[in-house]
Length: 193
Image (cartoon, rainbow, N blue to C red; front, top):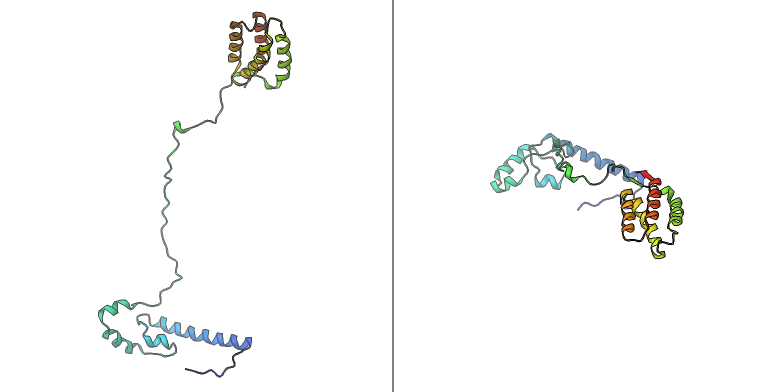
């Protein structure tokens, strides 16, 4: 083993100088290896990087190796590992199927229907209470009829609302004069939406 005569603790400048010296040696060795890419490194060159072996001396060594071990040794040296690899990127076509007509759901505009105007709810409520405050209309049906007429007229449409009034008239819950007044009231408060 080689004993070093340098002190164990080095100054910063000494350490940088040592690193620069080693870097220069490494560059020299690398340039020497790149100059002869066909020669495979021997065991001695791996152990002693400063030793220079002529390329003629390596050829008999390689010839004496068995064919199995000759296949193991690399034949070419100095490959650029930072070279850009050109590859063609093929853009895949979109495999999602196109939307068919039957796949469409919802959205779009609905056709306009005649329905009760929501802004006139209070007006409807007071007017309908006055109409239903008839002694011929039973007390237990008044609030139900009032709410059902508004709900059907606002959500389903005026036709269902009028149909409901006629149904209650047929069930003898509403008298004829009250049902006509309610139909007129509903028709006055319609809007297309």
